[in-house]
Length: 477
Picture 1 (cartoon, rainbow, N blue to C red):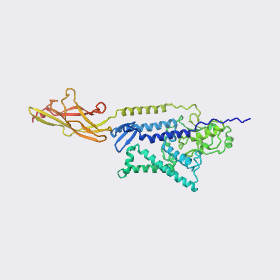
Picture 2 (cartoon, rainbow, N blue to C red; picture 1 turned 135 degrees about the vertical axis):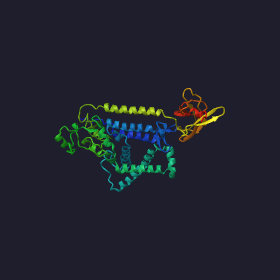
Picture 3 (cartoon, helix red, strand yellow; picture 1 turned 60 degrees about the horizontal axis):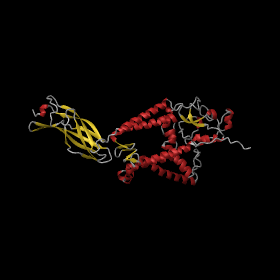
Picture 4 (tube, rainbow, N blue to C red; picture 1 turned 30 degrees about the vertical axis):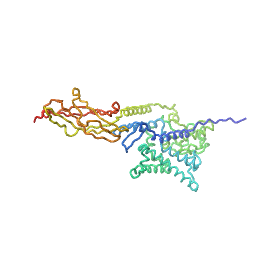
């Protein structure tokens, strides 16, 4: 009679799912800077051209009021992610983790065989062997090439690819860009090859912030001590190293003491000790225990769950609790504000400054007169093509057509990205206000627009026209 197979079907490991996500994130990160719509990028913060591209819409640096909302969106998103899933950002999205997986699991293990098994991250390669020393050098050279690519990709969000390579070729005028790429690549080499996960444990401040954000329903990698048994005492001192020793104290304990969950951990912790700041929620320990316990026909002792469900055993994890709903509301609100503010983008920028002289008055024949006000218009074309601009004057009701444009007499051209300064003179030959005591400040509106695009590229600016008191207009002393 055949022995009954009691093993459980092992589901697709979290590690493989993470690899798929890493591939998707990498493709997006490398491909996004190359995608343009009407010459605009999805995200580009260009200090060179003083432009912000967001969702394929171009904004001028004077419209950087959008940046605080983007930063708030990013940080609230990460914090909200932490409240729900612990350090899931660290294990699944963070570039540090992605780069370490590429270097350690792909280059060192799969390609060069410097490490024997992906599932043993505690055993460092024996560098006393000449063969391993050569492999280490090759690994560093391969990662150096990838670091340069990663550094270039990072800079493409500040210097678009269409300018990046041209700037690198002109080293004398763009040595800062060249130095930035080399500096970022050098940091990545030191960080990934030598600092390793110590960056996550000792350098990154996020591990300290997360402890403030956690609550009883935050899901993370947790060891079920109720099933597996207590491996550590209340002072975190290890009590047992063998299953038979555990079962002397706790006969029901299911932990086999194989320590697969320990050897696979990239941050070198023992998940059976409880919550630790070093855990990045990569779920490698969950995969390891799932495989071992699955062969015994039992569910994993390490699961992605919450203290409320596993440690305290009070019930099911509540995902949509008040704190989570508050984060969702804030994120939705910020996205709505960002969308509304982004949709009100001005396709041209215009600043109007009145000259220090209030007005000029010229006496004409037949008791006529001419009053002129001078202004300095600073206009910027924020589109991607050269356009012609002009403007209208909108006076108060009852003065329509009485204030005209004396200068410039015709439309003028403005090229993209260059501020155009124009001296503008407004004129009237009408008695707008008959006031013998003081000058009169008349509110006016300037409507500036692009010729042929009046319905889209148009702005309105408030200003004033100063009309002198009547004795000055009439030329009386």
